[in-house]
Structure formats: structure tokens, C-alpha cells
Image 1 (tube, rainbow, N blue to C red):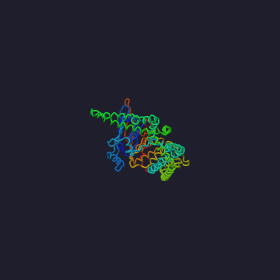
Image 2: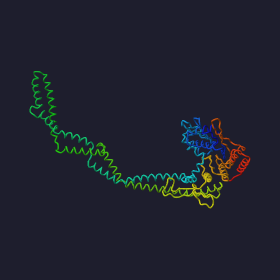
Image 3: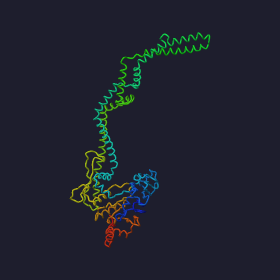
Image 4: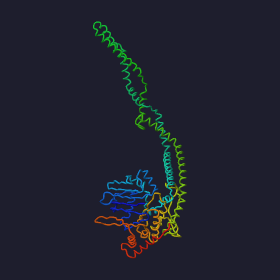
Length: 558
């Protein structure tokens, strides 16, 4: 159970330390005194969303701390150990807020991520507020309440996984079939492109070679003249360069007997002569090889023009053009194989649909059985809540298509009195009836292994008279098994409490502060009298309060 709650600088609470006991505890007080603020503080400890505006005016930070006594076999002990957090018979949870936005959480003195709080301790305390009525007025939430009652978490998770797989395949198939509808046009286009590229017979680096050949063709006459003319001048003609150089070399050789220096020059000329003769012969061969076909230049120009046109259409370079051709061929092959892919997707969809149908069948069967059990359990609880002849049911109707939560929808129906036809709960139930039905549902709901405290925040709204007494008695019974804290304005409910706290606010100067006081028997009688008669407590109200407390103390059976 929660033994201590400490709140500092939270909303209008300055400093507050409340010690709680086992059983049924009520918190009463005037509207606006701060009762629900205490519940908000507990919700913050359980991982609720923090808002900077809850920090008390003129304070830079706020803090909420609670101490829980843990049973020896509480599953939370294993979670704490797994998270490498200290484990003891007492669990201390602290959360701090600051205006700078630095929000921190501590579990048994160890700093933990705020987002981990709900995962670690969220199951220790259940808080039920007036928003529960809104849940009952939303038919789309009724099926979730049935699943919670029946404990169908595993079955629902299995169905949702199958639904997700089936939906994803359906979407993939839809996208694929849409693509197939445009497939023929795409195939025609790709076939045309591929044929055009195949006819071109692209070769790597071909454009570079053609550019070189074009330059040769454009200057063919000059190149031929340079080759043949150079050969003639250097070697072929009379009085050629080679002949004249040879003659000079001979003369120098003859005169070397006179001057040996000339012999060295003669040798150097003969070496040069060999090089000139070699160049001359290469020029001759080069000129002989320059045999151009008459229409070759036209062919080269046409080929280069074709390559340029293909580059402009499909890719900026010949290398990228060849890669584009390969990709185009692959895409065409994939599209051509589209029918086999479609058949494969259809087969997978059928398999997933069958698996989904099996999961849905299991879930639906258990829901049908649980719906009857829930209706009987709620009617039994309503009989104790001054609705002895009410008829309650959950009607399941099959959806036209599987949905994310199953193949049916559920809605609560109620006939509050005999002879009435059951109508949708969201349309006919009064506020008081909704409160009692919500309490009945929560009374029927399975209790988790970790749950040690229940908090009811004005769940008795709209109830009075005999129904209020029945609600108080029902909450008192719940307090036998769990620690129950209840914020209430009803004296009939407060009279059944094992422990009573009064919440009030005082003003000192410009500051308002919330106080929480534990009441003894006399103070409790006076507080219930105030709840009965208003701020002016008369003798008759006190007598009535005494009677209410006396009646609430009689033994009750579950």
C-alpha cells in the first residue's frame, strides 16, 4: 500500500505530508480546496505528463514523493532487480519538476528516466476519475473494457500482429496491381528504348575513338602531303637531305687525315643520317596507310550524331548511357515477370488471411463467452448499487471487414428498469447510472498482481440517496482487499470510510495553501454534517451524520 505522500510546491500546495493506512480512506472538503490536486500529484509519480504551470507561484521547482510498502511476492521486485535498482520492503518514488524544464525521477534513491516510471511502477496504483464516464459514453471503447475484463491481452496481441501483416501485404498488393495497370504502357516504352539502344550497338569509349578518327579525316590531305612530301624531301628525291648529309660526311672523312677533328664531326653526321633515314621511311609508311574510304567521313559524322542524340535523350555520357541500357533491360525483365510476382503476393495474402481468420476466431469465441460473463457480473454488482433489476449487456456485431481490434464491434446496452427495452448505454444512461456502472465494471475487472492501491476521484458524481449509500458500501468492500483512496462530496460514501481526511485551504497574506487533516470521530461527524447541511452545521445535521456513520458500521457481506 501507499504509506506516505509528500508534496512540495505543487499547484496551491506548499508543504504536505500525509500518512495513509490500509482499507478505505476518503478525502473530503469544499470544492477547490485541492482534493484533485493530490490525485494529480500521485498520477505524476506514476509517470503522468508534467506541466510547468503546476509549479507553485514564486517557486522554481516542485517535488512529489511517495512511499509504498511492498508485499514479499510483489512482481515489481523482479522488475526493479532487472533494472538494477535497489529492492527493499519499502519503495520510495520521487519526482521533481523545475521551471528550467529539468524533470527528474528517482526510484529508491536511484535516478531513472522519467519515461521508465510508468513501466516500473504504473501497475501499483489505479486511478479512476470522472473521465471514466466519458469512456462509457464512447462505444468504440466498450470492446476494450470487455478485453480487459476477460484478460485477452495475449489473444488481442496475436490478432493485431496478424492484422498488421495482412494489412501490409494488402497494401503492397494494391500498389503492385496499380503498377500493373500501367505496366503495358511502361513495357512498350521500355521496349522501344531498349530496341533503340540495342540497334545503336553501343561500345565503351567508342565516341573518343570516333572523335579522333574524325580529326584525321578532316585533315586527310594535309596528313598525306606531310607524309609523302616529307619522305621525298628527306630521302626519295635527288639531292635529298639524306644524300646531302651523306656527301658532307664523306668529305669530312676524307679530310680527317689532315685534321683529325673533322673525323668526329663526320661520325656525328652519319648518326644523324641514320635517324633522318628512319623518320623518312616512317613518313613513307604513314602516307601509304592513309588510305581513306570515300564515304568514311560521312559514316563517322553520322555515328557521332547518333551517339549525341542518345546522350541528350537518356544520359549525359556514353558510359552512363551503357549503364542506363543495363538498368532498362533489368526493369523490363522485372515488369515482364510481374504476373508471377502478383501470384506470389496473392498466395501470401491468402496465407495471412487464413492465419488472421484463425486468430480472429479465437478472439471472437472468447469475447462471446466473456460478454455473457461480464453482463452477469455487472448486473450482480448493480444489484448492490440500488439498481436491482437492471439489465446490462454487451452486444457484439460483426464488421464487414476485419479491423485493427478484431472482426466485431461491441457496445453496452442498458435497461435500467423492468419492462424497458435495452438501449445503447451512451444514449440513455444518466450521470448517476454511469457512475454506478463504471464502479461495477471496475469491481468486476481483474486485479493485477502488482496492484496495491485504488484511487477514485469523484466517481460518484450524479448519485444520491440510496444509490450513494450502496456505492459507499461497495467501495468499503473493495477496501477489504486493497487500499482505496476516494475523493468524494457525498456524505453517504464518506460515512463508510475506515479513515477520513479533510482537505481545506487557508489564505495568509497573498498566499493560499492546501491543508490535509486526519479526523477523529468527533471531527469526522462534524465534517459529514457539513457535507449534509452546508457551512452552517445544525444539530439536525449532526444527528443525521451520526446516524449515517452508525449505519455504515453494520457488517456487510461480499
